[in-house]
Image (cartoon, rainbow, N blue to C red; front, side):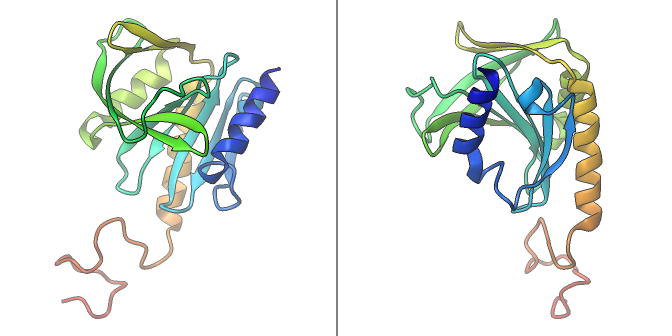
Length: 194
């Protein structure tokens, strides 16, 4: 049953995950189809991500965007009432740690709705550490529980996420810039910059 749900979600999120341009870096704990994590590469911005899914169909993708800001997507096929582009204030808590509260924005990958959340680089170390060492995470929308998930293998997943991102940063093609290459900053790959 779980592998069928995983296959359906991955098929729907194919544009963002399983596409040939987004290869799997490593499978942690047997991979997402076996209750573990898939560490993938989003080649559109050379950012790595970890993908996990749970038996009731809830999934998490977390990683780094083009500016190396940490982000997390939370998704489930049943959340059809999410309005694309709408802002939702969400809270998230790892074990007994203080809650993280902030905006999440609704999106759709084909017919699967998901919420995207991001945090500044200044909070990345704390966020990833809590994700890695915690036994579980709870997520709320107002006073409604959205998800309560066990984070089995999350420490290994975060370690592989960092290994993947380090390799992507080192292997980025010359001229591939995260910031505006036409800005005032010098760029060795741009012979026309001043």
